[in-house]
Length: 155
Image (cartoon, rainbow, N blue to C red; front, side):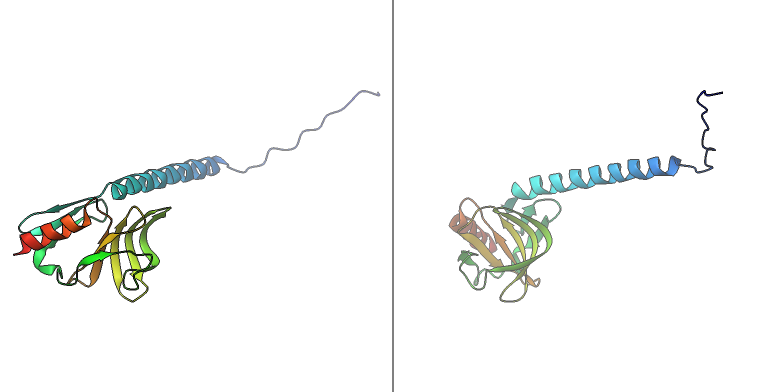
């Protein structure tokens, strides 16, 4: 009579399949968010600006757009340093990317108003007010050449 006796717990009537579905769904969602953010960062860090006789075309998903040249306030356009220029200083990000030197998307300006920003390096950037209620700021390889091309095409 001294042998071991084992008693099993009565199996619960709990269904656990939904936990697996929840974790798989969460993993798929997080993967999709990571792919979206990676794609967005890649696109805005390689933004380009095409100038023709009609518009300035910003090629950078998801912030790309065509701005008619008549909507650009080229008289107030200039080269500015967002770190020191009071009008060009960024306040806080509304929708976009802020990774090291890369700042892209919609930002509030400390002086008031909003800006569509494509800043990829510290220092000089093009500060380009629009008549659409925002400022475009971008670090381009040749800021003065960019402004000259806009002014030439707008004539």
